[in-house]
Image 1: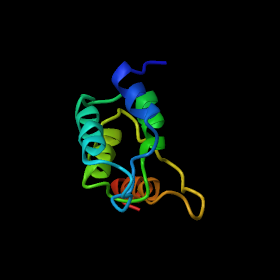
Image 2 (image 1 turned 120 degrees about the vertical axis):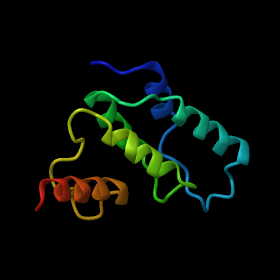
Image 3 (image 1 turned 90 degrees about the vertical axis):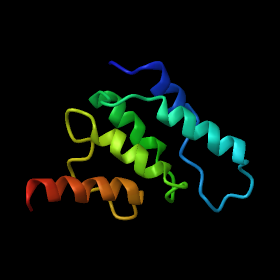
Amino acid sequence: MTIRDEVREFYRLGPLPSEQDDSVSDETFEELERMLHAIEAPVTDEEARLLLGSFGEDNCFGMAWTLLHLVESAPSPAVTSQPPEGSNMWIENLWIRYRNALGD
């Protein structure tokens, strides 16, 4: 399994926090952003699958979009089947984008 240290480190921090979470400091958001930007694209398929667990419940001040584009830089799509009802909106978004790319 090919997973770089910077990807593992970012994943270990857990899902991106919500923009509404007042307990998260500006410094924490800045550190998350720095760590996210430290991951160079393209990611491997294994890294993309791991990073799926890093999506939070909202946009996280644009970081979720950066993460989505990073996941999409993998050689193969990370989400190729319809997620279960109630799945994370970013996983559902990746599914929709995959289907749109197929022309369905």
